[in-house]
Length: 178
Image (cartoon, rainbow, N blue to C red; front, side, top):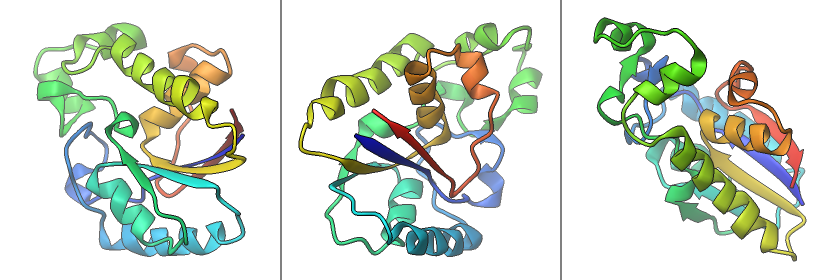
């Protein structure tokens, strides 16, 4: 199965560079324009199914694509929950008393879902649910950077730190086989 993984388009400026997690925020004007352009590029694909996170930023991205298939929305495709740290920047989190020593320590110190809970959620959706859909050849997934990075970490047998060290831009496409 070919997965076409799309990170949602740019969000409002006050949320850029923040740990947004489950905060339900809209796209910026530029984000809407970028999503339309991306949608035009995706017209060449013949998707068998479309799955999308149920948060506004992903739904608004997908709405610009004008594809003929009805999407399925899933909370399983949401970004990791950061609990009370959602909406905060790295600097704001450090100012609250959490210091960065290593990637794994940093990510475990923040509230919300644990890394294990988040990884299990991603594994369950892609490997336990989606992989069993044998009739699907090409699937569009509109989701978040952390979901894409975590899936690639699982599929490529990388560490989470290796996977998270590679940036995934707004409105970008990553293709992989499942």
